[in-house]
Length: 117
Length: 113
Image (cartoon, rainbow over all chains, first blue to last red; front, side, top):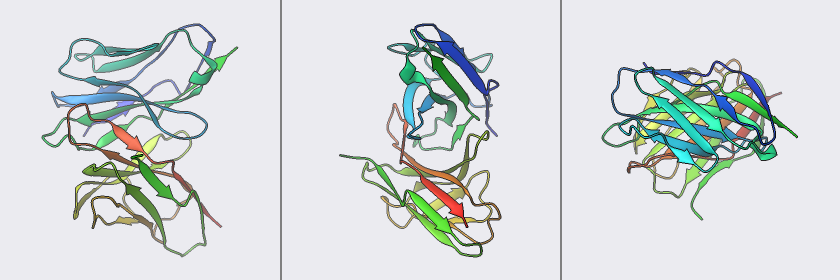
C-alpha cells in the first residue's frame, strides 16, 4: 500500500523569504503522479503543482517548484518570495498512474505554513 | 462553469441518525472520492469510485456508505454505526485524461449534537 509522509506539522517563514516543505512517500509502483495542494482558511483545496514520475525535470509553477528525487522517494516543495497569501495548510498527495488515471488518491497529514510580515 | 458542488455546507445530526451528504460534479469526470478531514490527520479516504455503479472502500469506510448511480453524483451516507462522525468532509473528482488532477468541492462540516 502506498503511504505519504509529511514530517513537518508546522512551518513559518518571513515574507519574501524562501521555505521548503518536505514530503516522502512509499510505493512499489514505477508510474505515478505526485501533487502539492494548498488549503487556505477558506478550506478550498487548490492544486499548487503536479509532477509525473516519468519526468526527470522538476516541475515549476511561478514561485513554486519541487525537488523530485525518485530513488529517494522524496518530493519537497519550495516556495520562493513567500507572500502573506501563501499562509495555508499544504498537503502532499500520491496517485498511481493506471490506465484510466483514476486510481486511489492518497494524502499526507499536511504542513501548516504561516507567513509573517 | 464546471465544478463540484457539495451540500449542505453545514449539517447537524442527532446521535443515532443517518445523514446523507451530497456531491455533484459537471466536469464529466469518471472518478469521485470522499475524504474526511480531522485536525492533525490530513485527508483520509473513505470511499472512491472509478466508474458508475462501482466503488471501493478507502482506509476508513466503516460506518459510511456510498452509491454511484450516475456519473455526476456520489452521495455519502454517514450511518449511526459511525461512532465519531463530527468532521469536515470533502468530495473530489479526477479525469482519466493525461495531466490529471483532483478537483474539490467546498466541503461539508458535519456536527453531531
